[in-house]
Amino acid sequence: MKKMTEQHLINAFGGESQAHMRYLHFGNKAEKEKYYNVARLFRAIAHAEYLHAGDHYRELRHLEGGFVANSMAAFGPGDSRKNLKLAIAGETFEIEEMYPVYIEVAKFQGEKGAQRSFEWSYASEKLHKQLFEKAFEWVNSGKDVDLGPIQVCEVCGYTLEGEAPDRCPVCNALKDKFTAFK
Image (cartoon, rainbow, N blue to C red):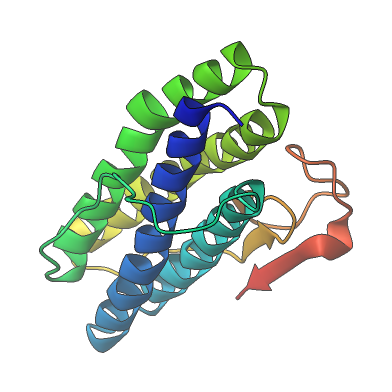
């Protein structure tokens, strides 16, 4: 694997892993504040981030040894309002800066597995941002978000509110590969 794409996979693994843990902590905070749907949203998206990290990690199976991951991570947890703002900032960075560059570099370097892994994550991050923005609007007005079931594709991490589709629009997995967070 080309070194630049390899480093991007390492960085993406680090970023998705940190997002997974941050969102679990943010979910616990939301639950303590009685924002039960916000907590459920954080936990569902934490699961999607875990799946993204695993996908990136599998693409690095050829590596041995220690490597440094350079990834944007939001620090300074607070109340659910602040945590949602941090989550939105992280998703925005992935959508506007990180994944578009990683996808183009992987494409240029002919690293198809890495390109697929980046594209799958990128498709989900857009929806994560929208869901977090919706939750932020509600929490900003002092209310828990009105939210239907959150569905996460176990193959690619695609995330949506509502019923699972017959096939995942990102990886084409069947409906039974979705996990519902109700």
